[in-house]
Image (cartoon, rainbow, N blue to C red):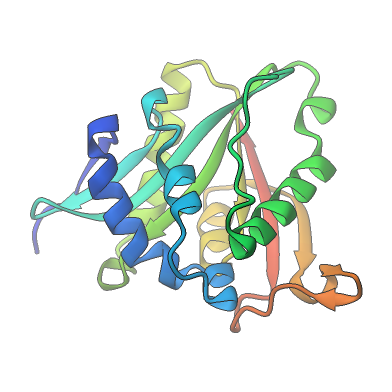
Length: 207
């Protein structure tokens, strides 16, 4: 079996990363599947806008990407421009829930001693490379980079049971769990992912 290598994703890798995410994350991620997301330039933008921070990683085999972990840095009292995702109604539903959960977690309020943390945005492994420990290794590469960069915490929202299991094995702390059936707007359930994906969970790890 060909060796798997792990590398920092550079801004010049953006097109290759977007192609991978469109093929795998767009179609396989539980919420995207639930909504039948389709073409989404907003998600493409969300996937690559933080690459200049040199904190995202890719797993490579035979010159091809087989997994990615996209990470950005959240900073306390940041008042810069925020990306507008309102042009895509389905993706906006995902962002709305994500921001609501982030507000509930209130990381900077909960941990007043930190002024920045890593936001694990996307974790995705190609369907033909699962079961090889790639997701866990991508998380470990991220944690090692955080230690070198003196970044004190990582925060990850898991929409998938499988990604949640990866973090549990790595001794992440679960700080919030919400059943999809309990997330409703105007009395209507928003997301109905296929089983076994029944919860969205929030995990953190302090270093």
